[in-house]
Image (tube, rainbow, N blue to C red; front, side, top):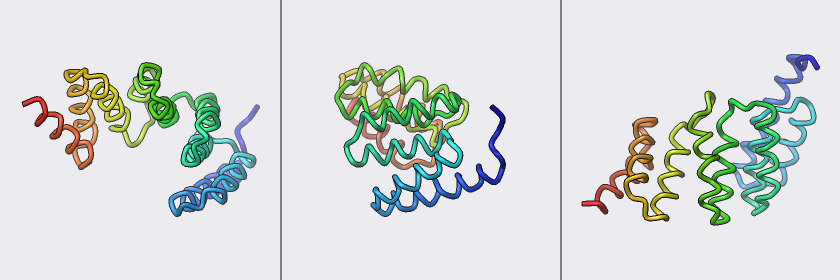
Length: 163
């Protein structure tokens, strides 16, 4: 199967960007329709991942996870769906199951925002009382994104707890 015509990919990207705007405005049903339209024109890992994320806003975690699996099939180098699967498992209190997905997200060649899987692993290890591991992950999050105030705050908070 060849590559899609460039105009199809361009139109698909425009649609998922429009869908994202609707998603951020809380217009989830409209966002879902636009993500699906984008996927119909030209399936991309981004559209599947963001469709899954929108489903997660509605508490539809099984569907969200399925979309992430589709994204990984299309582009195994795209880290966001690995992180998102980890987050969906965290939301279901399946912390041990989430860890390998977050580790895969950390290693993914193509992933922004790079600090998220480190921060999510830090949260898991905090819940599990594994302070040293949590500290290691939060330090890595700050190294990955020195300008992220949430990462810096999480690290500072943990260091304060440990002192």
